Structure formats: structure tokens, C-alpha cells
Image (cartoon, rainbow, N blue to C red):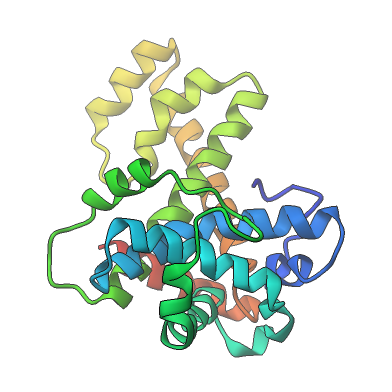
Length: 238
């Protein structure tokens, strides 16, 4: 979702608040929520020692329960970060209904998400083979998912304005450790001056930062928490 999507006004916890409704906007909001969080939650379950098949079933069952039991109706922004709320809800779900969820047939009841088991395991295999706790792994995967969505949104903006080639060449420059010769190489490829490339990179970084703030703003209680959450995000990635 791009920050300008009219279905989701960019406000604190807007996705959850919208998803609590009963209309098409609520369905779209819930789909967005599932899209962002299903893999971090799946990864958490796998790190708890469950098989790929069980993790797939449990992740689907968790989102099914969110709908059937109207879990989001109890969500309040004052509870803190959205990622923390969902992880806490998952822990309660696994503690209370582990056996029941494990026995549920895939595809039974409401199916808010469709998990490609093979793809999920391919992604899970790329997770670091270390002794990090399931909570830490969830946080890292959440952070990477947010960053992936920000980059996808940024790419969409450049594509819609006919500047996809510029994006493809310059998006690696979003990292701060760029050397002078890299700017010169990009300038030659894009038939631009080195100074123009520097300006284009500066503007891309500004737009990237704005999109990241917009994504994070949807999941925190107050704007004052955005900087703290972004700092947490990058620490989770590192």
C-alpha cells in the first residue's frame, strides 16, 4: 500500500481501526494487515519448534480467529505498538487453542490469507541460523517486511511517473556508504551530470524516509513514537 491510498488514511493505528468495520474498506484493511504480518508470525511459530505444516495451519487459524472472534474490536492504540499487540495476541492464541488450531483443516472456515507453504519455507530458510529468540526473529522479520513494502511503494511512485530506469539505477544509493566513483558511473549510465545524480539520490532518500514514516505512523499510538519505532526497526535488522 502506498501512503496516499485513499482507503487507509495515514493516521495512528488506521489499519486496525479500519479493519474493525464491516464494509469493503474493512476487508481491504484486513487483507493489508494479513499481508504485512503473516510471515513474521509464521516465522515466530516455526522458531517455537513447530513444523512447516503446523506453522501454516496455525498462522491461517490465527487470522481466522481474528475475524471470527472480532479480536480487533478489543484493540486500542493505547496498548502500544501494533506489532506488539499482534504478537501478544498470537501468544495467547497458541497458549489457549494450540491443539484445536493444529487440528483445523487448511482452508476451513474463513480464509483471510492463503499461504504458499513452499514459498513460506523458502523464505524461512533464508532466516539467520542463530540462537535468536522467536520474539527477536519476529521483530527482525517484521522490520524487513516493512522495509520491503517501503521500497515497493517507492518503486511504484517512480514507475508511475515514468522514471523506473532512474529508480532501478539509484535505489542502491539509499544506503549511506556510497563512493564518489559510484555517482560517476550512474551518471554515465543515465546520461546525467554527477551533480544531477546527487540531487536525484537526495530526493529519493527524502521520499523513502517520508514513506517509511507513513508506514510506521499507522502502527504507533502517537507521532512522537515514530522516530523511536524507526530506530527500533533498524536495530532489529542489524
